Image (cartoon, each protein chain N blue to C red):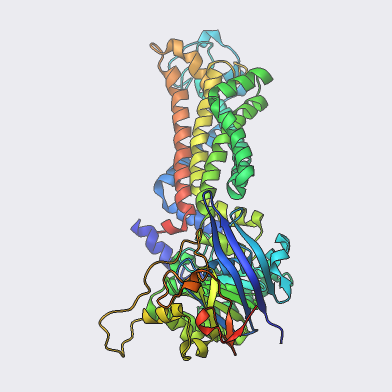
Length: 326
Length: 299
């Protein structure tokens, strides 16, 4: 079956006044219809940049897609015109932003904001039908329809994120990009919002890319996981490959080492030493070698391809005996 | 305050039916007493100046010289007294209001439209568009507005139309700058990005998402400018560049009255008070509107 989203060799740079930032460096992955992919990584790993590239919403004049292809439902996003993109955004692909407190327009009633998306993309609907649809969507995300007459500041954070989800899913897009949708919410509300997203995803058969740095959320909600470091995917696989298999990239091992585990008797966490490399001045060879506990001399010389075994891929010389991908 | 609140709660239980944005804004505006006072003042000024014909005759009272009745103090015959040509000051103040309010309002509307267009384009698109537009505005801003207005009137000649053109040209750059900076602060917010992410057009984003959120400073600027424009009209008339001197206008009345200030202070007081009241009305209305338009300041 054809993939819904196919990203091939994506390179994105930000041109600053002083330096050029290499935010995404040769990203490859595919997403099946109806699947959920967790995109995990530290701040600055290029997760959000990847999402913005798919939306073609990189900041004007600064961010550019240098190379590569993004195929969404057979359409090459990198070559689409701005007008075509406007039609796709909201109808084929939607995005949920991190902070629900700021991603709703404070001067417009929430019902109108949900209705606006429908007005933009469903020209076939009359005013009354849109109104009815808005009521349905409100019900779908678990909000009383009467509250559509209220303004965003009259809602709590969790309810606002429900409205944001309502806006994103109003036109039943095929792909939903969720950029840390629960980071700004407290833990109990996080669970509710994730459950809601999961439920709607199944109902509408939407594929989701969930961007997060919370491995717990990924374990609960994602079918596939991609771990990003310095603009590359360094490990990718099904959730079982990442959470249950024995073989991992040293960075992934480090990530898991820095999660507190209540069942073990440990006095301290084991963080990864050092910092993410400066994306305007990336190290040669494997980009993780400066922090890697298992680095060898050759790591600083030669960049590694992704080595694949079944569904599991790792970008590290330790797995050189696996099948090599380009 | 307590009274209005209970009435509010009783009369309108949970807005289930869609009432228009305008209605809620109006309701919020009416809760603000100072703003209501400003509005009443404004309406009184409007009624008095538009209905000036009911109280006095334009030709006979405000224009025709009547030397027998010159410099009469305020009294039953002449409510505000008469000036040195025997014209009724009350009538002239009323008819003068027409000029000030009409020219002022039109000027503000023209410069608001022009300034918003230029400022919004510059702020939203940024880069080259921004640079070119704002540098042109800077050229106008480099010239003191009163000088600019004087030179335009001098070049085009006296008259109401030319006066409006002169005043608009000199206040458009100010509006453009205010609008641009408000747009810049709103443009970076998440909901603008979110609007782009669900496929909104640039024009709709500017008009529907950004401008309503930037309206506060623009309205404050508009009211201050309204006050300023009324003063500018008066100033230009004061130096004889506004309208032909026979036409009643607050500024030229002040100008004529300055010689009689010591013995007949009422000549300067009435047009002066008219200017103060007009300026105050606009400022109060502006503040009220700003509060009413901001849903976060509700209650």
